[in-house]
Length: 254
Image 1 (cartoon, helix red, strand yellow):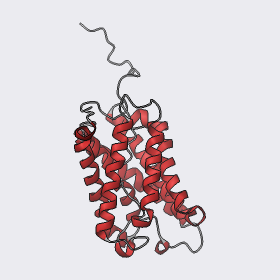
Image 2 (image 1 turned 180 degrees about the horizontal axis):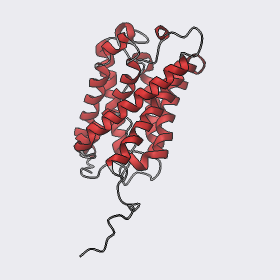
Image 3 (image 1 turned 135 degrees about the vertical axis):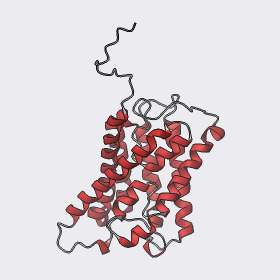
Image 4 (image 1 turned 60 degrees about the vertical axis):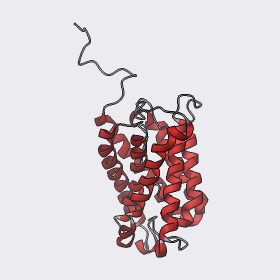
């Protein structure tokens, strides 16, 4: 008969429960939207594309180090789906993560709206860091161009995540590599689509813009497709098969 105390607190090696992980996913996505989209809306004219790209990368990097040990620091529905396809995350936890990420990101956008609207002359017509194609693309890229960019860049992003979470990768540098990868992705694609690669980020700001909301389906579908393809091919391409080793609070993205 076991003498283990059922009321004892979990040890450091016990993966955090889903109830603990979901608020952290919401918090991380909240910070991603507030920091990244906030830089674009509040300081975009001053810092330019490079500054906005750095803001998104730094948001992921800082939160991955801060709370990645709890939830795995996905902060992105496409990442959760891609990891599940790769066998690195439990499918049963995907719906909860997605809801938490969308809720957290939307709250971040709401806070951003309250702050931004506090300046005289603010108008959503001037832009709210929304994603789009055609007339809503920053420089007029077509639906096809945007779809390819979003899918391919999310595909590569997942390869980076799956690679840096390998036990053989240098310990402690995962968040740095992931943050830099997201920065580079934004440098490439801000002129194309304002960069999504994250359905929660796109939905968060689209709620405030009817035109963007009409196009947001692409920024849900394309990143998820790209992430799923990465998850499905990573083991085949790299020869590294870590299915069953989950990226959650015990084996984190950060």
